Length: 86
Image (tube, rainbow, N blue to C red):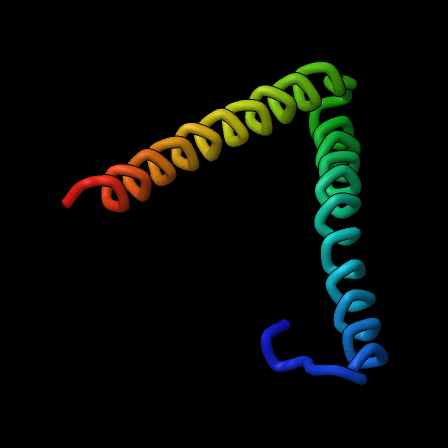
C-alpha cells in the first residue's frame, strides 16, 4: 500500500476488506467446485467416488506446495549468492 499516507486509515480498511473477500473466495470456491464435479460424476456414472477425487485433490495441493517451496528456496539462494558475491 505504497500510496497510502497518514490519515488514510479508512482507505486502508477498504483495501483490506476487498483483499479478504478475494482471499476467502479463493479458499471456499475450489471445494464447492469439487463437490459439484463429484455430483456430476455420480450423475454420469452412477457411482460415488468422493475418495478418489478428494485424494487426487490433496495430492495435487501438496505437490503444488512442495514445488512452490522449492522455487522459493532457489530464489532465496540466488538472491543471497548475488548479494554476497563481488
